[in-house]
Length: 248
Image (cartoon, rainbow, N blue to C red):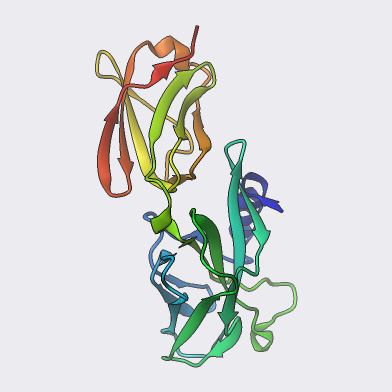
């Protein structure tokens, strides 16, 4: 299994050194990416949902550069443990083709097909699309910058209960618990004190909270804020909430 906190830090560190670019595709990441070597890829859609009546789905990967680009596509089961994303390789969907060289200016259709029958409840995955190294571009003492897309995939989401979010403020910050079944996508949250002052929070970008899971925005001084109001941007709509206090 792969825990996101450590792995994402590694991705960021590697990207800073120029070995590849990493993108968690969502509101903050465009559908197109270009590497330092000139390779450019578009992917569509940015989010895949396969309902219980569907056998599979398709992904389009377009090579809009002037040379062939080798690409690998892999599936990871996606869960949340103690507020952290956990990934593990999965074979719940067959990916065809999983490795392919896309000619310049061409679009590759990648098919995702179920390997088991549909069942009640949302199943969550991440589909990782990687530009592979091109041996013809290898240079001694240098690292090739490459592209990565990381797409959310949901199976049988339509059979799960809607997300139900409950907010809490406590000694360690602000948290939200999803007591429903569907994963909720939170772009960011705006927090204000009773006198209208905005509260800055770390890690306040695109977040997902899965059903029966909790995620947090750490703030050691949260209990000193008093009563606060939260405006959250959840699944394309604005939600206002007053978090329950656990400050004691």
